[in-house]
Image 1 (cartoon, rainbow, N blue to C red):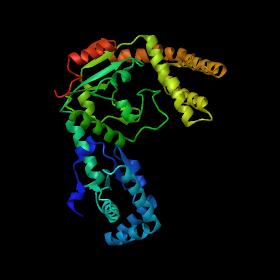
Image 2: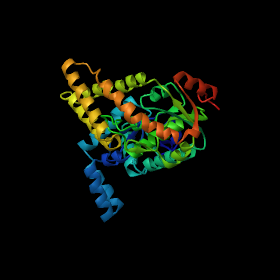
Image 3: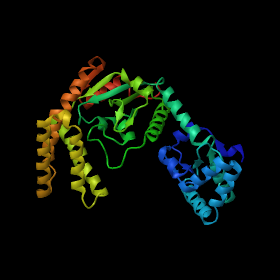
Image 4: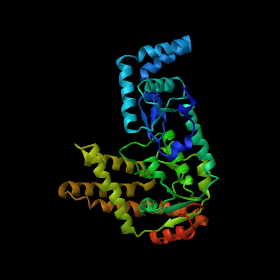
Length: 370
């Protein structure tokens, strides 16, 4: 194959959000892949397993022969057709396997035979993954971070969505960053999270932002965790604290954790949406029982039961605001206030949304090309 059909210009792939065809087996894809990649394997898990055994016992040539014997006829036609259908929608797609070797080369050859001259990644998954890791490490030296903090329900995520140079770590981790933050759709695995984070950093820095805004998350966001070099970069960053009245915080929390969450449960669990939602809320409460203490745990659990019964009776979820407010005041606020007190020397500003946005503009946190 001509070198014209190979590329290791990984940066351009990131900046264009290029669609990638991953021809590795599903088990490999599940362990880690790239944003905008689609798994259309050359070999399924069982075929790959058999070829791997053959390779260990008889070497590369025999393994290659076995692979061709397993993926031929109807199997070959179906897999080529799947690639062809995707390319017809995304003609600039590229493909890769683990090291950019036999599997992606064979896939590329089969596509070329039917007139699709697709580019494959030089070095495959391994080389692209190495590039993203290195870029994440070096990125820490190319921007000034600032952290956006605030009590639970302050609307930090809502504010971040108005800031072009913000990186929403909770969105990348598909988690709301608290004991109640689990979503119905599971979090990405750690490698996928790191790859998505690398994409976000590369894209923001390419826009010329010299300063980036992050929510004050700590190291862990659910089961995902930030790379250590980024944790080090953020650990002593200046902190701005968003202050929001309690009733507004109750409304924000209620809307996200009750109204929107119940709508999501309705789409995934149409037969038992409310019961399943309640079960997951109770599990989240159970996780913080020790920190809440027995009396407060019993109190908030009772408020949840009352609100749930009222919703079943009247159809209105409004009473859930009672336990939401109780949890904010009795659990989250004291815990956050204690944590922020230990870092009070980093706090640059406290105030409402408009004051925070004005500060970011004044200190050029919203400008490009700095």
